[in-house]
Image (tube, rainbow, N blue to C red; front, top):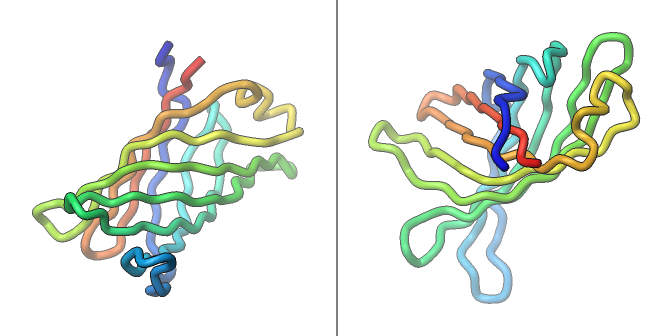
Length: 135
């Protein structure tokens, strides 16, 4: 069941590069970002990198990973996968799922939970995301 909103964050893209396609697929774009927000009510800094590939139907397929850091050494890592579309303003918008790994007590609520996310990139490099628990 889709649960409560457990995270929100905002930040900026810190880098992009184009990687060659493999096995006859088009090139992928690798994007890195830094964001801050809250996860399970804990203030966090999030660093992540994901790649996106243009599909034949004009949508994007992406996947990535990252690290979250909270106060006092709290930490978690994540891996995600999703699909996206281009926006009229020149950015893109993704929807997908994410799973976490952590041994920090502050993030114990992430264990055994998949997250469902919305992620937006603006044309000028701003990023914003929301995450809901899926139990």
